[in-house]
Length: 265
Image (cartoon, rainbow, N blue to C red):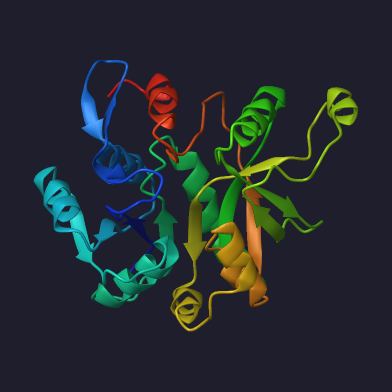
């Protein structure tokens, strides 16, 4: 058995942003790099991982990744989401990893300190099947989430947790609902922005392929709901942004927002 591996699922086809992995993002130093390369570079900063792989079915992405020195695991074209693609990539590995970390290919702003606590938590919490990070939204972050929803865009996914930190529900709506007068008086908002990174036990990831797509997953378009609908426990590990902006590239409009937040390469 090898140690943890990071798999970055990437597909060319996207309803909201076709060709998204190859979209170019310019850093503050003026250097342009593809979204998938910046996500790979973010994954390479994570300490304790034995390997980083891009999982794709698209030769354009595969060729591009190999050109900048990344490793590729080819997966079937019919993978319905990133978790399915990670499960198929797991089948292509020579050695069984201790755990699989799914770092989304549209999240180049993911710092290593969002990922490393997941690996530690999965080792110490025997009662959970997977771990994912969440950020507590401050007033500005909360308003950005609400503004995207008012504009008809999905700006981010939120999660509601129980007292043990286990996920109760994930949604593309901003949850929980807070009346404006209530929000104005809160020092800390109970709103958590879900960061699209997961650490799974291999056996749980394999089971995912056996589970049917549930109603909630289909309606929300959120792959992790398949686990919740099957009664699997997801620990939501709160992480600290440390003053950095976090946002996924969900829409073409997000390119400028992410470019402003990119570190100098």
